[in-house]
Image (cartoon, rainbow over all chains, first blue to last red; front, side, top):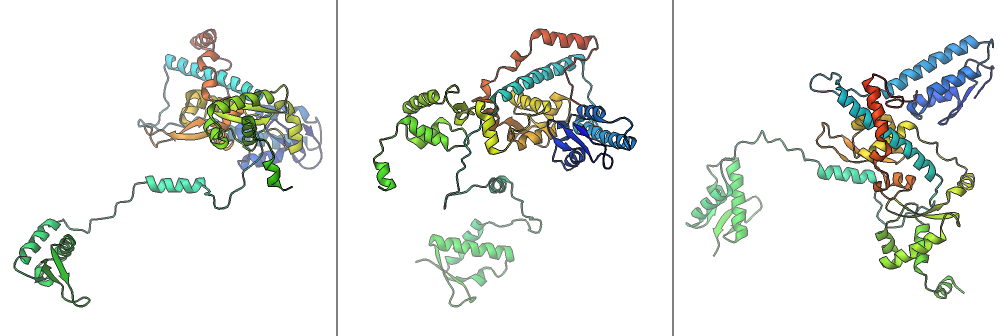
Amino acid sequence: MTFEPAGRSLSDFTVELEVYSGPYEWLLALILKDELEIFEVPLRELVGSYLGSREQGAAGGLERDTDFAGSAAALILLKSRTLSPALDVEADGGEEESLSPEELVERLTEYLKIRRAAERLREILAFNAGHYPSAHTLPPRPGRLRIKPDRVTLAARQTFSRLVEPPVRHLGPITVTLQELAGMIRVALARGPVSYETLTRDMDRLNRAVTFAAALSLAQEGRLTLAQTEPLGPLTLRPST
Amino acid sequence: MTEGESNQSLPEPLPEHLLEAVLLVSATPINSPDLSSATGLSTQEMQAGLVVLAERYAPETSGIVLRNVAGGYQLSTNPSCSAAVERFRAEARPAPLSGAAHEVMACALYLGPLTRGAVSRVRGVNSDAVVRSLIERHLLAEVGTDHDAPGSPALLGVTDEFLAATGTSSVDDFPSIGSLVTQEELARVRDRLASGTVPPDAGSEPA
């Protein structure tokens, strides 16, 4: 780490950390832009390095110290907020849970195991570092299906999402069934051909629609034939021969 | 002589030749069924070929090594040659992960799949930023959903990239978490807690 007493304030202060090497002001900018995680920056090492490299009695020293103290305090606040446990909002108002001594021992024991596992993991990762696999990447083949993860996600969301139920409040209660009106048509046809208008003269719109559907159903079954000599003209139902 | 005529005059490739060729062009580990499907080799032929390749690509005799990682096989450079590879590629080795990152990975490895909240509870600090960083590095991934928890949070687990980075074939290759801490060490923690002394390395986060 070097500290050159030239220029303004901290502009010439450069840092050498494991996660970053360069001007201190850039380090601040990277943290603020979320391009460098604050939890990765060892603040104690940063402060110690600054103190070790500052020059006593240098011109503008007080201004630099003040600027550094201000920015370092902001980093400490930011890091503490980042690392603070998220509050669990419970039904009882989100009060902090109190642990019994036994529960505390259990938690610390579990954490200690994780801590040791993490240390072991660090060794394993360091031992296995330096393996570089083939850099060969397959070129896209003409006509070959390319699966884009975002499109698969969208398709899955559409497939497994529950469809929004259409509003049916404007519909009245169902008072008639297809079977009932099919029976009524069969009775009418027993006396010979009958026009659709005659059949539905005293019906409301719903019953007329269901009667038409029943007539189509019977026609499909071959029980009657539908005759309409001109478009939108009278519709006649005839029993099949 | 055309290329086709040249190929026709070549002898039939041995199983290890086929395996070697397929492994060379894959950037990720290839599992046995895929390897067998690509090469057309039977299981016995494939195993025999892999034995030959393991000898040919032993770390002591080759700049390329055959690894059995993440449930498959992979050819990669020998770590002893990594400096030359990094110079050629003009890129430094990625910065080592922080202690927090190792702890989060240990949680996912030994306690996972688990939610972000569960990781934070074990560590005693908010771990969301660390988790995000590890997901970006493809060492952790969301592998499911905890439907019993409010909001159905995602469950985190380790990835094949994690297994490859640790040189393991599966999570079963890691020592049990119980074996990493001695009973004496656990007893010391209990004693310190009972006497009101905080353990020196329990629950600390580097400042």
